[in-house]
Image (cartoon, rainbow, N blue to C red; front, side, top):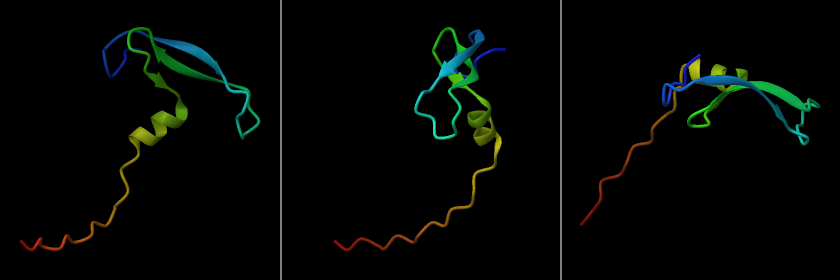
Length: 64
């Protein structure tokens, strides 16, 4: 697997989180050897989902 940021080598790494709210202590993720980019299942899912529609508010004209 290659990194999307730097095209470097990604290695499967186990990360430990002792303060996780889900009760899990460790999770596996891909980490880039070159730039340090981390990609796990949650990050991947969020990246491939379409952005939600956000309503833009109208800007008022500025009076000079």
